[in-house]
Structure formats: structure tokens, C-alpha cells
Length: 264
Ligand SMILES: [Zn+2]
Ligand SMILES: [Zn+2]
Image (tube, rainbow, N blue to C red; front, side, top):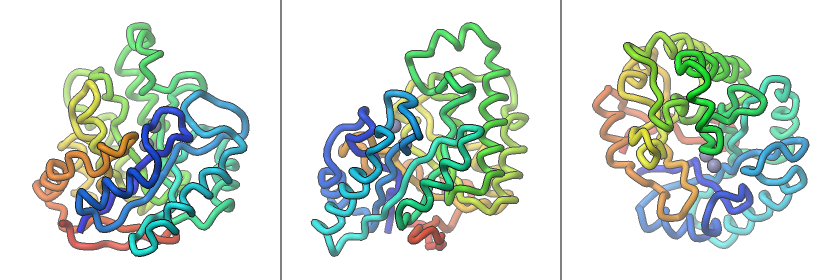
């Protein structure tokens, strides 16, 4: 039975539909368990794609309400946290603000003012060598993993979103990151949102996942839905990919504990 732990709410300002619409979509897709994980608030208004600094209680109430509306359906409480150097204390603060089932670690920012997946900064890709941007991204991602603040780490090669890729074998960027993931014992996300972006590819790439499997890194498969119609999107492809590279288990999350179950 499948799960989807990466789903957003209207609070982030770039997602459609209410939580109940996501639940109905998940039930229709035959998912056994889901979880919401909206973009974390920052201490001050940081950008225009996350809940406002004072909206965490609104988010918690929204999820509590949908949980009581569907008492027989497991709906987990998560949060997608941006790893930004010097804000580790803020993540620790957030971790204490609710009885989370899981915290997701993400890297969107390669510098304090450049969220690399934001189309409004596309021009910057022409102003810096793609090699350097990839290196900054994976340096940040490795630091995030080493912080050990998160239960799973999201969309591992998000830096490819718009199709910018250095030439040659890309393992030179991510093998160090994978070693850190194995060392930290954190779960790696397979995220189908990349199929809906310019790159038209699951995050991470097959080669990346092969190297993850060789290191016995556990996985979780998610859609990163920002619309009810994206819940469980392309899971057949993602599960097939996981099985092809040798995975037989995926992780489930509750109260910040991970448990392996057979792959569906
Ligand atoms: Zn988002
Ligand atoms: Zn997300």
C-alpha cells in the first residue's frame, strides 16, 4: 500500500485546493496513508512562497481539522523545512512547536537571495557557470544532511529543474552527498514533481538512485502535490524505478520515527 507524504496547502500561496480535496484525491488514488508538509514559516517574511511568520497555528489547525473530518484515514503532520545556513536554530524551534510525524529537509536557496527553482531568477543561470551552481547546490544539500535535523530529505537533484546540467558524469557532484546521507541514516525522497517541470525527470536521476541503493539508503516516494490532481502523480513510474534499481522497501513515518514496509 502506497503513501504520499509531500503535499502542500493554500497557505504557501502557490498551491491550489483545500486539504480535504487532497484527501479525497488520495483515497481515489488508493493511497493507504498521506501527510501534509507545507513550506515552513521563517522568523520574518522571507519570500512569497511560504506561510507568513505567524501562520503556523493556522496550518496546525487546518491539518487537525482535516484529520478529524477523516478519522479513519491516516493523515500525518509534516513540514517541509528550508535548510538555510544560520537558521538551524529556527528549525529546532519549529521542531518543538507541534507533535510532528516528520520534518522534511529541502534546499531551494543556493545563496541567501537565490532560490534556484524559482523561475523569476532564470536569467541568473546565464550569469554563472552551471558547474558552480550545481556545486553550490550539492554543498548546501550535504550541509543540510549533516545537520541531522530532518526525517527525510527532499527532491535531491532539484538543481536540474529547468534542464541545466553540467557535461559528463554527474556523480562527481552527488557522491559526497550520498555518503553523508548514508552516514546520517536519513531517508531519501524520490519525488515525481520533476516529471511536471522542464526537466521532465523524476528527482533524483536513475544513476543517483543506483548509487543510493548501493549505500543502503532508505527511500520514500512522494508527489510534492501543489494541487489535488497531483496527489500520487506518476507513482507507477516512481515505484517501477525504485524496484528496477533494487529497492524492496519504502519508509513510513509517524511521530518522527521511520519504519520500513514492503514496496507496493
Ligand atoms: Zn512549493
Ligand atoms: Zn514541496
